[in-house]
Length: 193
Image 1 (cartoon, rainbow, N blue to C red):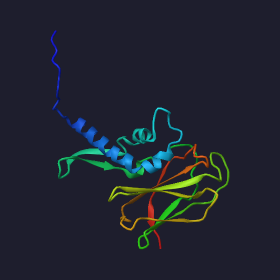
Image 2: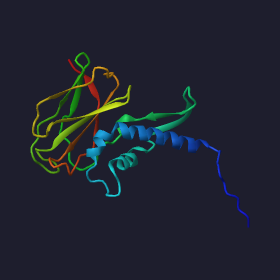
Image 3: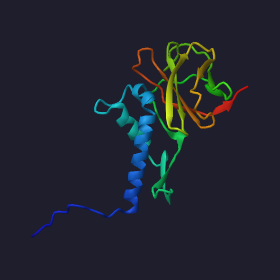
Image 4: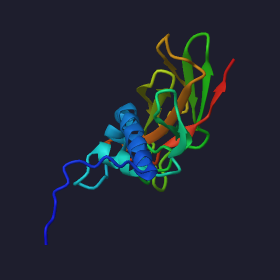
């Protein structure tokens, strides 16, 4: 029996092209969400780093949809379903009443939640974090907000160049020692006064 070594494979069926497009976009998202995923997956398997965990949770078809349409450069178009992205995973319960409002003129976001004390799967000292993603320029910034017990509104300033209409916001909680997280939660940003 004689076998010939294949040096090059030029066939590119559509499913293979779609997978490549999905993974290229997932890699960009991984870098964009790195500030949150670095601390948002404290209980990941030891064989995975934070980027591996982010990729395994966010390469599903409900997060990244690849169609058959192509952009002006000939690349397949990938649709990102931002509300489905997870940048933290755990069993801590998030506080009730989490909300974010924006002030376009001052380039600020205000985060609010109900103050809560210790309970099942929650501690008054849990720290709240917000990841703000600006999709027009593919930038992100992680903010430490306050603790679960502190119900005061927290205002954060965003860079002046950011498009306030292209924001995606995620919140999650960590225990005081950072060893346990909550699942991340996508927040719809409302226009404030």
